[in-house]
Every structure is written in C-alpha cells, then in structure tokens.
Image (cartoon, rainbow over all chains, first blue to last red; front, side):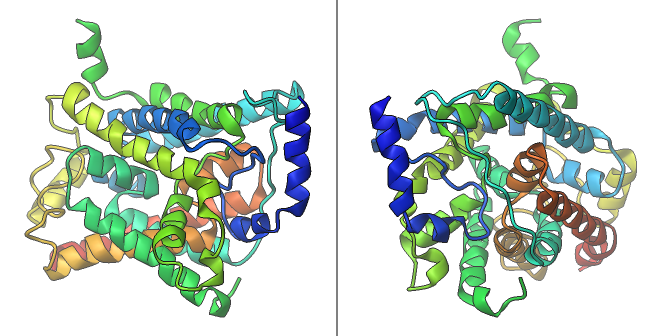
Length: 172
Length: 189
C-alpha cells in the first residue's frame, strides 16, 4: 500500500502529464511505473475488442454507409447499447469506489469544451464515411487481411502529425 | 451447431454492443486506462517523428499501453479472419446494394469493398480520395476533436461529458453529409 501512496505523490511533480492530456483522450491515468511487459494484458484486451469489432461487422464499410443513410439499425444498436453498458459500469465504479487491480483509485478526467470538438468532429465524420472506419477498425481491417488499409492507417498518422504541426494556428 | 459454427455467424448488435461497453470498465480496472484508440496515432507521431512540435514532445513511453491495445486489435482481426470468419457474404441493405451496383461496386464479400479498396485502385483518383484522403481526415479530425468513436462516443458519454456528446453529434453530422451527398459524387468518378 505504501508504494501506491508514493506513486501518487510523484504525479505532483509530473509536468509531462499536462502536455500529454492536451486535447487527448486515452491518456494514461496511472501514476505507477510498470515494466513494459505488464502491458501485455492490454494487448489481450485489444485482441478481444478486435474480435468483437470484426464479428459485429462494425468495421464494415457497408455497415457504416447504412448507418449514415439510415438504412439499418445495427450500428445504432451497437453504439447505443455500448454507451448504456458504459454508463452503468462507470456509475458502479464510482458508487462502490472500485479500485484498479493495482489498488489505485479509478480516476476520471473531465474534458474541456472547445471548438475542436465541432470542427474536428465534422472532419472525422467525413473521414469515417469515406473509409468506413474509425481508428480502431483501421487496425482490425488490416488484421483481417485488407493490406491496402496500411496506407489508410499511415495517412491517418500523417493527418495526426499535420494537426500537431498546425495546432497553434487552428481555432480551438 | 457446434460452438465454433455459432461463433462464426455475424454477432447481433445486442451481443456486440454490451461487450464493447464492457471494455470501458475492463480497461479502468486493468490499469486505470481510459478507453480510446485514436491517441495511438499521436503516440506513433511522438515516437517516430516528433520534429520538435510541442504537441508531440511528451514521454510517449508512458502511454505505451495504448499501442499494445491497438496492436491487440490488429491481432484480434487476424484471429477472426483465420478461425472465426463467416462463410456467407455480408448482408447489405438492398437499396444500398442496388445503388452501389450502379457505381460498379458489386463485390460485397468481405467487410471492406474490394472493388474500391485495393492496391490497384490506390493511385486512381477515387482511390486517393477514399483511402489516402479518408485516412488523413480520420487522423486529423480525431486529434482535432480530441478523440474518436471509442474515446468520445463511448468513454466520453459514459462519463457524462458534454464535450463528448457534442463531438459525437458532429461525427454523425459530418458522416451523414458525406455518405449521402459527397460519396455518391466520388463513386461516380
């Protein structure tokens, strides 16, 4: 338990944290220093998530077109029920103050409202319709053997880089 | 019907959706991680080409779990393709199928339309817009918005964050506009 408290104190000195969180989800909330291989469990979680994405056809370009053309309920059902389960899970975690398996209290970061969510959101919507994929499905599509999507993924990485390059000049 | 045969069928939304939702508490409990994928693209930039850009100057090694997660998704895709793929073609809404056939997109075998997304098409105008342009917008837009479908629509709304709800609405508006108005024009090229 004492190592855990020590690890929390370290966050006070961690100036890197602010840079990492800038307009970013998916930021690591844990203050614990863990060996590289301890991340293997996240690869297992990713693999399970990938299997779900493929088997539910969420990564299908056709399903995405049907969603945006209101020709099928499937995607709305998937995203809607995922959100409902997510809300209930987060409520339970907060209510019972459930801790992570390392004994840390679970921390939720609040997101700041800015214009990026509007402009960026619209641009991502365009890209989602074109490719039929958000970032997760890009990885899954490559895994299922659509090797050409490697180019799309590389292009997405370049898009992120160009955003970083022009970030200071964009309205936020 | 054997278990494997049963697994091979496409999974209905009421099975897949709740399982995707459970990824949220799973990652929180496994290591206090917020569910999200698009940040992995940022970490690749920070690791491979930070180019002195402040946005990429951070210790990406602290976020390496996210790259493991993304790699896992790719591996999950491979597992499914090898062991769990459904032998039947993807069922496409007849209205959509008819319209796509008009643009020469007739192959609905597989999840990615092979008539559009293939190496031969990569340097055609249509291919450049769909694969390279589309990918660029996904990477640029998600980072500008601060998250993607997982980070905003699922994780963000699960924690009742207004910015995530706004972002999700904008994803949908952008997608509706492109899928209904712009993509038909591109497919006619």
